[in-house]
Length: 128
Image (tube, rainbow, N blue to C red):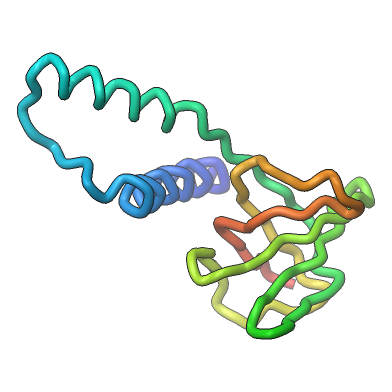
C-alpha cells in the first residue's frame, strides 16, 4: 500500500514538474471563451501522457562525456538502457551501484533498438 501511495505521489510530482517546464506561460486566471478553449486543448495534450515503470537490477552504470545511463535487467530478464539527465529525479539515500534494485519511471517511450532505450524521469534506488 505504501508503494502505491508513493508511486501516486511521484506521478503527481512529475506532472507538476512537467507542467512547469513545458507550459511556463500557463497561468491560473479567469477565462473568456477563446482562452478557455485554448486551455482545454492544453489539458487534452497533458491527458495523453502516460508514465510507465520498470523494476529491475542495475547491470551496468555508464558515464561518457558527462552523460550517464543505466543498463537495467528486469525480473523477466529483459534489458533496458535509461539515460539520466539534469531533469531526472534520483530518489536514493546512497549512491547507485551495480547489482542494486531500482524502480525507473519513464514516459513510456522506448527506442526499437536492442536493448530498448529511454529517458528516466525518476530513479528510485531500493535497498540492496
